[in-house]
Length: 48
Length: 233
Image 1 (cartoon, rainbow over the protein chains, first blue to last red):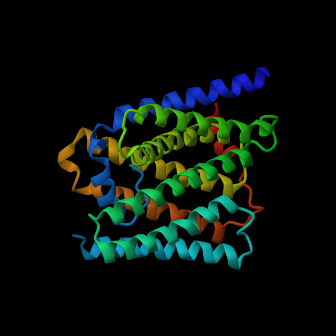
Image 2: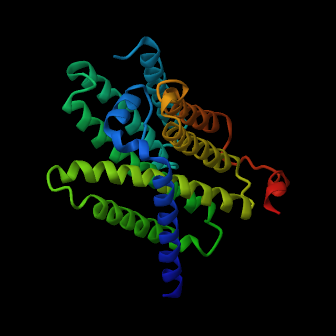
């Protein structure tokens, strides 16, 4: 049980880091739909 | 409007993805690395489908928009499965191996919950906003997971060259894409310059690096553990 709690805590840490990273880098993603469409058409799996 | 260079990169990636899958089938390794091969196969199918969609409806159409996001959410989930599988391979000699699948499912659930909470106020077109949000969140989770995974590779002194190269290539891909968008945020004037080309070029890098790894590096190839000791102390 303790190990699963540790797993959940680790998961939360990863999610927090990811959300923090996203907040820092994607103010430009306000227009994500248009830019992603333009970028994806150029050939790659552009995610956001 | 797309130029010849855009189409050239697009078809190059499509060709590379197709070659990767063909190589895997020819070497009878499709099932051994199932999530990874499935990801590449669906990338090729999605790229082919999007080309047809863009040709018939245009890149600014609703049809293209929905095709793009519905294919990308599937690809994001598959990429997440690829990362989870890499974790399983790296941790397969440790006790933590038993928890990888559960941890991956919990993290996926938490990420979906976070995406839901972020867009729950979007009454109309909730599904569209949820898919876009979840796809973005999964990619940022992927970036963080790759750095965690690389730390594990160093700490556990992983010596399988294939695993190391696949992890490194994926790390470069995630970092390049995240870096491109971060720089675009910092310097909006650069959006339509070199930064425009970085995401597709990183996608090309990923498929080229993986193709090279699986074509040229045998499954049993190992590196001397001393190669990574410099960074492990």
